[in-house]
Image (tube, rainbow, N blue to C red; front, side, top):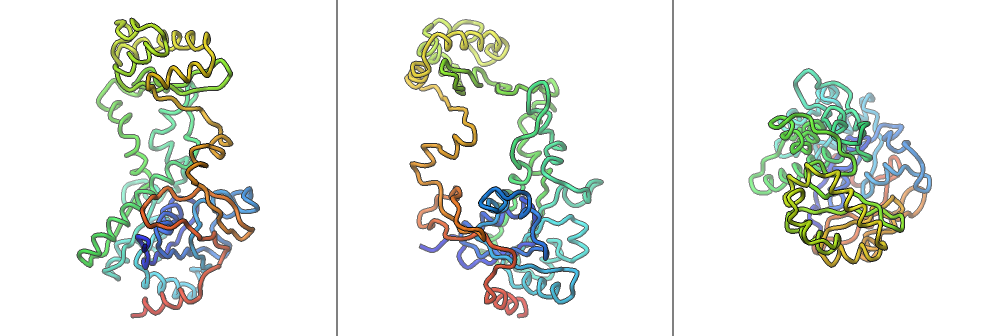
Length: 381
């Protein structure tokens, strides 16, 4: 069966994570992705060398692509680049708005020149406004979008992965797919502008609206959910940590019966509703900890399962790498890199007929010359 994006050619002038992550997804869906890099390469190639000599960030965000190294300050290379863009179905970049406009590759300009192209761009703060040309990296956007303010305990904290890059990359990918569907129906191209700040602020909507329309900035709650209880982590008698999550009053009554061994706690006025459980969360968690300390870890897990209470192990990264569910479902695959074959997570896309990836992580400048010639020819039409 044909891959969903088979025949779609994507050219991307990209670096770091946000745009590369978006085009990685397009490659996973069958698109031909040509990554344009500066002569010294995407700087994400050099963040570390932990994956058999390759950067963990780079192999994650760039498998399945081809690479061409171009110096856009060189007139000949710039002409080649413009021809490649003109021959593409999709173009994506994550330059600053000012740099994109200077090169004439901002999305509105490209759409005006090529009415059928899907021209997309990811920037930190979006076009217009006082911050449009500020440098924007993942942690800067986490800070600006309020993520630090709701993460951590007494001391605020970042999210431990590139959440701003990932969410803006996913919005860019989603917008590109929607634009391709529209183009298939109408022939229209699209100019897509995705802001990292817009994207992450959207993900912050629930706490943001609570603060804007409610009592103000909520306290950071660390391992607890800020609005639902019991919903957090507890230590079992064997030293392991488990997350227990109750979503409704009915689930709490089940937990009171099956885990706590005290059906009356389910209707106790201190705990009968979620609002009352939040008000009395310290006492509630004290009772849960007390109960767990008196039973074996296996018994606790069994009682939670019997009551159909959601639980999860609190894994470290080695635990995730060895996760029995991921391994049983073959969610890893071998991928070639310039330094050899490595095992990586498989794409989360699960579409019938979509074959497992056989793509490699490209070396700098590693591409099919025939692809460049075909794109140059298309761009010259």
